[in-house]
Image (cartoon, rainbow, N blue to C red):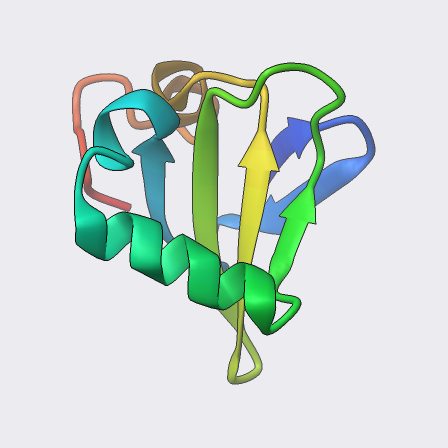
Length: 89
């Protein structure tokens, strides 16, 4: 199953490690450090032309990628078929 992240970007659901709300998760210094390291190493893909609302952490073939999207984490969870299950893929 695929999950549409915005624009022309889809990822395999099995490759998703986590879906995170940008506003609440970036309060943590650890998360900010992780995002900064991903950006420095070129592992961030911005699929949003608008203000980002969430990011999706994926791992495929040994490569980790962070997708920044304008779609809310709750909407992405619904699209993934996880309406009542948070943080479980």
